[in-house]
Length: 303
Image (cartoon, rainbow, N blue to C red; front, top):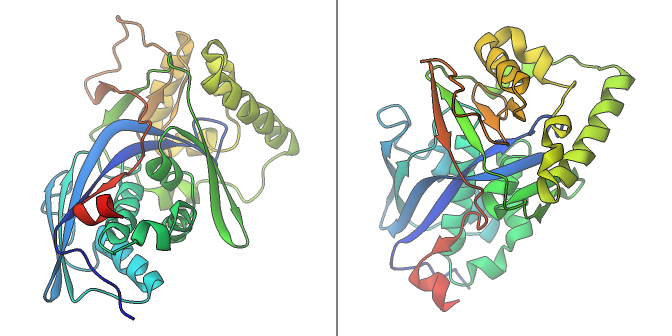
């Protein structure tokens, strides 16, 4: 028996995310209150994507777009594709800045597909949705907070990605510093060595554990908890402006880190009012998103 597809559009709001958070390389992530708004409806034929905002005029408008690719991959998990899809994206998350724009697109696509199928949220539960999204993204550190909200710890097992969600302390108020220039995860990963000293691995294990406590229970420890020796130093030469801003913020006691693969910078503690990052940076004070990527639509509500 075939699937029943929604006759009305469904929508999803996907949060920006910041991964790594300093020492939690490829494991820790935080959902932020900056969003892309996506909607999709089933059509009689064809695959189309309309983009406004970030990426308009640059991103593809066909099935090669990440949102549609994720939707089609999810429909394949259901075992059936609809005859056609029309997707609309209102993008606010900066592209290629280390704020999870690709994860927002992937998670959004998975959620839209789930919402367009009768009983889709039961047929593919959140754990399965995370596995699909992580498989498409290649690692789970951004897709986990985007899907689940809050502060997440993600890891991979033979069956796929898994994650747990924790609630950050109410006094954690992130600030992001976004540059005009772009950065790309593939080139950032290319800067990392194949091996690191055992002492550095041990250092980061302790700091990542401390960061979990600091973010959820004692933000006064965030400066020490965000120290890293596994990736930020190796990437500094390719992103000198980012490395300089992180160092400047930390020199005045701010728990600052590279956001994801950069080049954006994330501050997890209050930035002094007289701190000036420079004209090339746009500072934005954000909250922590606690809901994740919730899909809405008549069929979802009836389910």
